[in-house]
Length: 450
Image (cartoon, rainbow, N blue to C red; front, top):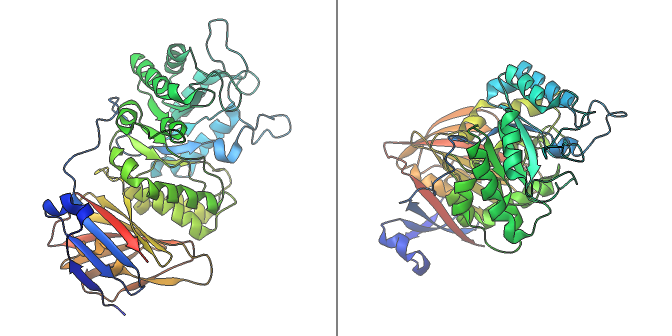
């Protein structure tokens, strides 16, 4: 049951890797899947990041969109409408309930906050009924809590929700946000021809930097280019602190799976661009809402950590179940996400309805997530030595299990029979610390045939 048939050989399409001395191994696992993988030493780093000194680790915070959307009905739904009250209450809870201490620091406004027209000076203005104190006063309140305020705008002639856009106003809007002491801008890309998107994002990036105010810049540049062409990730990284690639997240398991599938399909394109100062953004954490089981919530949290994704929650922190809260505040998962090495992980193998995702960490460690994509039956046992990264445990590793429950598994040798259960649509998350050998900066590439 625990044996593997392995042989080292050279494959033509891995010729350059072989010439560099990388090890290529084909192994048949007990599950019957054949994986071809290699450890490739990375000789270059990600392209230069946006030079604003921000987002050296993935951004953490809260954003209203997925949970509260464009609810502007404050007369009949005052507790859930897009208003200054909502953000003040979230800030209060973030401080009182440990979210700030866990690392979540941004309170972010999304679409539908503006009035339907600009003021006499051409500046955006908040809806006076829903934001009677204005954005500057709201920023002051958020800052008084030791938190930071994020805001939303769009590079087109109107926002996705139909409010005034920034087309032709990017310099005015950048200065307005700086005058209001805003700390983050989420810049959307609706209502603009796709060939002009890149120029629009670059223009706003320059305008923000020209204000002299440190404003984290969250872009959606590749999201609007991918349907037509391959985005220029070198330019994107030089322009933005993080960037959306794929469709909006929904409060459903099918949505989470589609994001993961897309991220794995295009990982060789998107992962090299990520690193301190700039990150791929698979969209909001929907943990604590209505659509995911607890196992599925654990899967989202674990895989977002492996992907070095911004941890931007969209939920109601005023009313969240204790298990979801504990998951979102799990210090071990957050530590993986915020690891200072700043390397995004890869999906390194898949087969028999298991997926393995791995991320190199600082201090010679490796984070590994094993997801059970089967959605029927009970827990299924995964043979740990079948994971590509297990080859690093020569002669042995110290293993720490983080999900589903923290447990120190101790020292485990390379030749092991260890099998661990993974629930349907759940994920096992663990860290490996090689003993004696040094885990080098690497990428685990894979190709599977079933």
